[in-house]
Length: 373
Image 1: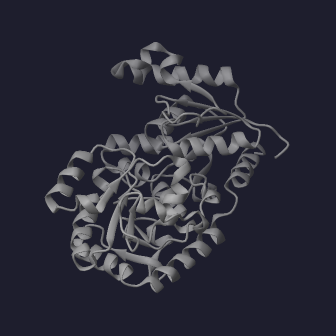
Image 2 (image 1 turned 135 degrees about the horizontal axis):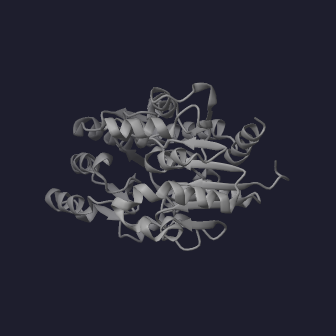
C-alpha cells in the first residue's frame, strides 16, 4: 500500500494533538488525508499537510447548538460525496462516531478513544444508546484501539471482537529517547544541581487527580528536600484550583508549570528522574508511552490499561490514585533510590520498543483489509 495513494476522511476533533498525529502519520506516507471537525487546532503548522473541513463551513446552521443535531448528518453526507474517500475513519464515539454512523458513511473504521467508551458511554441511557450506534458491528468494518481495556469496553457496547486491531497511532515514541536529557533546563529554573525532578504530564482536569499529586509531593519533599515538581500541563479547567492548593501547601518555590511546545517535550521528559500519572481513566496514554521511551520510571494510578504497561516492581510503582499516602510512599521510594530508578527506566525503554511496532504500516494494513472486503 506504500505505492497506493488513498483518500482518507477522518471525522474527529482537530484540536486534539492525538487526532492530528493519526492524520499526519498517513499524510507523511503520501495519502490524501481530509479531516472534518467542529474545532481547529491552534498549534501552528500541525495541520498543514491535511485538507481541513470545519463543520461550520459545511452548513452555517451547524453553529446553532439546538439546530446542529438536525443538520449534521446531511452535512457529513454532502461532504462525503464531495471528497469521495476510499476510507472513513471516525475518532471518538461521542459525538463524532455517532454522527458518522448515523450518516451511513462507509467503508467505516471506528476508534473509540478511552474515556468515551469506558466512562462517557455509561453516563446516561441516551449516551449509551448513541455509543452503541457509533460502534455498531453492522456499520464498522474494523476497530482500532490502543489497549485491552478499551477493546473490552467497546465489546460491552456491542462491537465485534473479531474486528479489533491494537495500534498505538496516538504516540510518536520515535522522537523520544534518554539521549535527549538535558539537566541544565532545571538549573535555568533556579533549581539545585542535585534536584530530583518529578514530572507530571497531565492537564488540569478533575479526573487527573493533580490535587493528590500536590499533597503527596508536599509531604515527600519534607523528607527529601531535593524534590522538585515540573508540570507540563497545557490546558484544562482546574488550573485555578491547582494554583490555590500550591499556595495553601506553600510549595510554590519547588514547582514549575510550563505549557511545553511539542518540540521540547522529548528533552523535558528525558530530563526527569521519574514521572507520576494518576488519571482516573486512560487507554495507553501517549504521555505514558513517551515517558517509557525516554527511559524514565513511573508512578501510576491503578486504572484501566495502565497495568498493561507498568506493574509494581516492573517499570515503576502502581498506587491507588486517590491515596495521598500511597502516592507519597511511591515518590519517596523512587526519590531515595537512584539504582531503582535506573533499572525501572531501562525496563520501560525495552518494553515500549518491544511492543510499539510501526503504527503507520499497521493502519495501512487495516485499511487494506477493509478495502478487500
